[in-house]
Length: 316
Image (tube, rainbow, N blue to C red; front, side):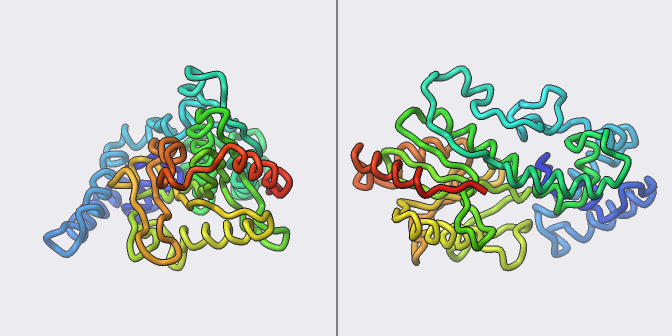
């Protein structure tokens, strides 16, 4: 089971309250084992999720550790939180990047900033009055929050992780984060990346579960009905491009490595042909190499685009 804040908690998987007694947990677990087993009409993924949920909270000691917020994967925050919880601070370089070249890509804006602000606002509202001294990033508290609040933290962490991943691309790259699309809309572009391979609109996403391409769009059990990640990214990039007078080379949705069964996948047909969903660890290579060598920008052209973007970009 993923430690992403966007993932269903084991209580949500088993369909019980967090304060449910052990016998209620056990009944829910046994019932769901029967219902989700592939031999009785279920799926392997659902069956595995039920088993993993039980492993986390089926034993009273394991359940107590989970409820205290222990066993949170530090990979979710790239090790930024020394206490093993969720980090309240964005570190642009990250630990691994600090060991590399000192010449970093130019980066502007605050990745994940808007999502963090919304998370904190809703988290404090949910916590209620008289709780200002509680850490809103405490893993135990985050796990008990409603999923719509946890999704905002997952969004912020995903954008920050992407910014860390691309920060080591070098001085030939420029990244703008949390870019407003238009004053009349709430839409934004998570990242705009300009480099020798072209100009890319990038969305960082973490739905808390597996995703795949299906019929020219991303699909997954945790993607809301009617949500169109690629089409939303395309529309936002087109709107921004018209105002800025630029044309994007490609559109990329980046997800946690474990959420995609293949390193990357490409939309083959339609107006989104060439758009990619990519594992986060592969993103720097994709941005460095581009879709094809013929699409590479000249130094003069890249400089012109950077100047135009610097004048057009407004942050959310």
